[in-house]
Amino acid sequence: MSRLTVIKAVLGPILRLLFRPQVEGVENIPGNGPVILAGNHLTFIDSMIMPICCDRPVFYIGKDEYVTGKGLKGRLMAWFFTGCGMIPVDRDGGRGGVAALMTGRRVLEEGHAFAIYPEGTRSPDGRLYRGRTGIARLTLMTGAPVVPFAMIGTDKLQPGGAGLPRPGKVTVRFGEPMEFSRYEGMDRDRYVLRAVTDSVMAEVMRLSGQEYVDMYATKAKAA
Image (cartoon, rainbow, N blue to C red; front, side):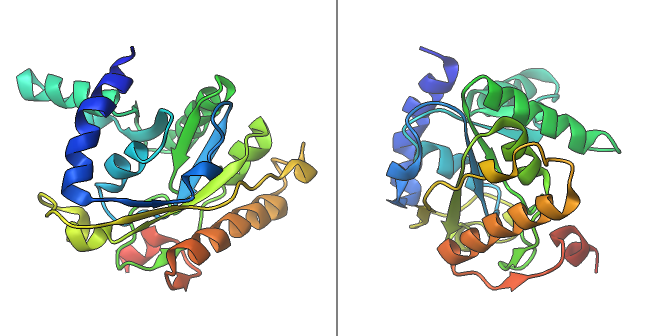
């Protein structure tokens, strides 16, 4: 039994007790083979709650600072986050996006489930922002289907993503798989990448009920 399975088995009941997730559409996630789970990102605990709602292990990218701490606390944090499925990547600098993309590709080519937040960062105000095209490149490079998902209510339990979340009820909603095989070999066409990304974000918007903003969340935070 892998460490990821062990930690999920231990933490799962605790997180379900604290956040009482109502899960809809989990049957849309294929039981095996590569799949991309693409959803909105409201707060830090999204990455803890969504994976426990799936019947199979889910991997995702996280900041390498979560696993580089010193001393006992640092080692425990590294053990916890990597055990929860996080793959640490240095996302700072010009090569951060490429490293994240290549990591996701490797995970998918190994036949696993890979979660991604196309917005690239947490929403600053609860609205859904424009998706970055890495999600499109991943599905076109690997042929993996995309299962859109929506986190609903997590921002109410941990406003701003800071501090300890309070107990409460959240909803995790999965949509039907989306496949883009008609665009095979076009992973460098920027118009195709934008069209695929916008299709995924439209489905995330439908599932979440969020207001859509046609700008990047990073620009909204900087404004």
